[in-house]
Image 1: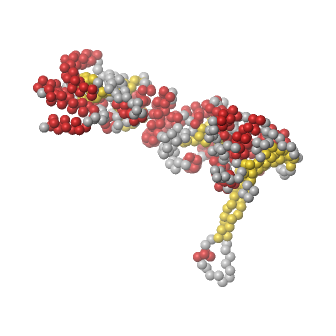
Image 2: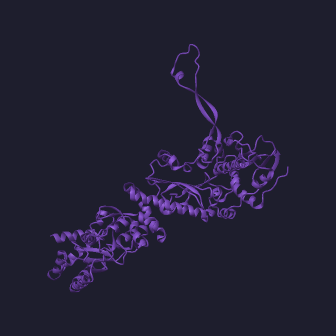
Image 3: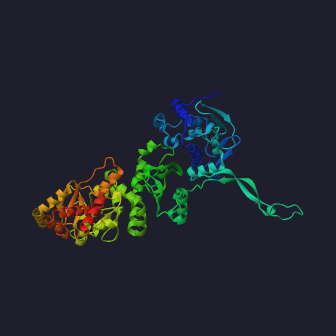
Amino acid sequence: MEKQQFKAESKRLLDLMINSIYTHREIFLREILSNASDAIDKLAYTALTDDKVGIDRDQFAITITRDEEGRTLTVSDNGIGMTKEEMEENLGTIAKSGSLGFKQAMEKNEDIDIIGQFGVGFYSAFMVASSITVISKKYGEDTAWKWVSDGADGYTIEETTKEGPGTDVIMTLKADTEDEKYSDYLQEYEIRSLVRKYSDYIRYPIRMEVTKSRPVEDKKEEGAEDSEENASPKYESYQEMETLNSMVPIWQRNKKDVTDEEYEIFYRDKFFDYNKPLRIIHSSAEGAVSFKALLFIPGKAPYDFYTKDFKRGLQLYSSGVMIMENCEDLLPEHFRFVRGVVDSQDLSLNISREMLQHNRQLTIIARNIEKKIKSELKSMLENDRESYEKFFEVFGRQLKYGTVADYGAHKDACQDLLLYYSHKQGKLVSLKEYVEAMPEGQEKIYFAPGESRERSAKLPQVETLDKKGYDVLLFTEDVDEFVPQTLMTYMEKSFCNVSSEDLGLQTEEEKKQAEQKAEEMKGLLTFVKETLGDQVKEVRFSENLGSHPVCMTPEGGMSFEMEKYMKRANPEFALSVGRILELNADHEAVKALQAAMTEDPVKAKDYAQLLCYQAQLMAELPLEDPYAYTELVCKLMK
């Protein structure tokens, strides 16, 4: 019998596949089972469209047979089968989807999952099999055919016998090596696990003979006495055909037919999270692209959620067969906490990753999913505030990151979902709630960054705004300050950092009076600046200090909290912000300083230094010389 050769490109790809190492060899079983399911689909469709075809749909099944001694794994179906010509067409050429990308990746020696990316289908079996035999009989034909190949050397086709229509794929597994134990794929547990993982929702039963045990009666000999050993139950092993897959995905069922308990069991088993999800989104869409989605908003973050090791994405299915475990393109980064599955019959099972990235259907699905998630979160915010605040405590930081990421490209999806602590109301509020509660005359959204709410609330500027009846949002996370810089405005209101920007409270007349007072007391400002030297960039008066004598503000709009963050993130290139010392001209401590300038200049210098130390401490800035501060306090107390 003459051996036929694969086409040139197919031969090169197959050779690479057989002789290279991949991390997801296990997907071969998914491919073979999917092919079997497709073959049954074709015969089932023929039966629907041709009255002459007498097929009992309940008899359709896929059978897996293990032969550990012979090292063969066989997948059989009773589908439509193949003729000799169809064997040559279907098995003689590897699908060209992704061929170029495959070869380029291999040249770079990348560790890749070729199945999910390049659609090599049936030939993935050669990653685990040294040879493959396919026996197939087309429905309605009298002749069966046998296709045999041991890989890149080619294949043979010859006539054979087979009782009924369908296909048997017989894989002889490779010998075990130190790095790879191919015999694992003959183990009952491994096969059961792979079927549940990748092919659980194939619509036809996937059956396999499994080993079970049952108790048997132990017949005692006459006269034998009862003993503990005789009293223990006896068991015997037996073989039984078992269906390995559940066949009907929970997301394919109508929402009203699924109980909360069923949702929770599915979520726990699928995503290994034993905490109840906060929200469940079960949706379907029909139209240009049809798909079903079952999404979960977790109640607790995975341990690695805020690390680079966390894998975002949804499980992507095509007609119940998983084609990608973490499809990142379906889930935007700002909603990376969502878990779930998406199933679309409009996507090819063997679609490659590079095709997915430019796939119009996938883009439509992703946009729809983003809208669904935002709508669910907004509903929770408005109708179940307690649950939303629990959610925000866990994942709020991610929404803030999403707001500022990509120069604010996703801010419309995130900004309405943000919460900040309100100094005036003493609780978390949304930006919308803050603006709607603003009194007449307030034109800015005020915020105060700090290491804690308690400290920020004591800032002199917060006290001034509080007396005015204006609220202040207390920021405590590193990312918080980047949000107003990204949004610029919200509901046509600009943001104002109370620690570094003009509060905008003075009228033009008040500004003129302040300038006049500064001119009259210019000597005090000059004295303090000369005393402090390079410790501060400037000394000036401020009308925003309330009952406080002094405060330290940053130069140029960048806050001290931002400076601290930059030093933590990249200490080698971090810049220090200029310090501006602001004085309250009406405070008794500043008046005492002014009086000491003429009565006791040495003491006046000590007062100036003490006020600088106080301003640094209030701004949560480290003192360069704490001992000098302590000695100064003790000196002034004597």
